[in-house]
Length: 126
Image (cartoon, rainbow, N blue to C red; front, side, top):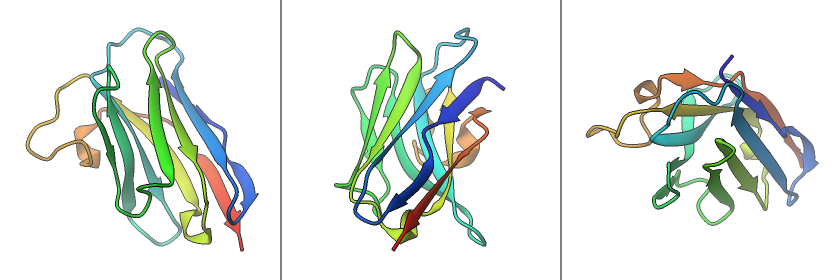
């Protein structure tokens, strides 16, 4: 697996978690990295994305103002700081990356990413 996600766990509502996703091989120059999530019985949802130099960030409507994505270019690691967590944030969180500039579908289009991590479970209790 190229991308290794970590940092998930169980947290109470209102709490915080920080997810990390590192490229274990560090052999690919990514243009963008992103986080998606999938809750039981639901489709994959866009959470956040960032360009390789951190100059552009994008967020899903449900996480704006609560989550922050950042990218360490030297470590080829993307982070997702999640604050004010809600039970509806419970899901498996997947990191994704791609070498290409996104097409008209933009950063939030999951099929536009070639590389995916294995997922990390985030559970928020009420």
